[in-house]
Image 1 (cartoon, rainbow, N blue to C red):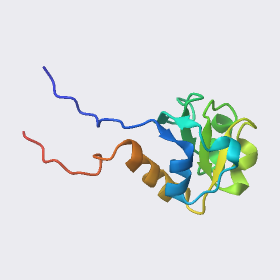
Image 2: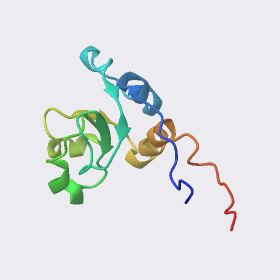
Image 3: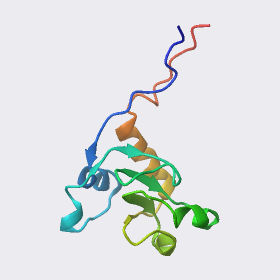
Amino acid sequence: MSKNQFYEKKGPFPLLDIAKAIGCVLSSNQKNMMIHGFESLVSSSNKDMTFLNSIKYKDLSTKTKAAACITSSNLFKFLPDECIKLNVKNTLFAVTQVSKLFYPSADIDIPDEK
């Protein structure tokens, strides 16, 4: 039997906790929303969050089903109205911080046994 090659996912997390981790402020009606995963623009559902860091993904971003998206304010217009936009200065740094919430052991380098 093969060994699981993927990391254990944690969560769900309140959107408020995620926003605090990346330095965002939320409106009061968004704070209690639970986020179950961190997925791509295409794979995300209304229980997940995603990110948009480049205009070249605008065609995918307009169709995302994500509940929330980490991005910069100049890319807000390429996201659906119902998607909560989390404005950050450095999108990829914020993605790293959120990834650590959902996959805390992913940055631990375990030597290959072979």
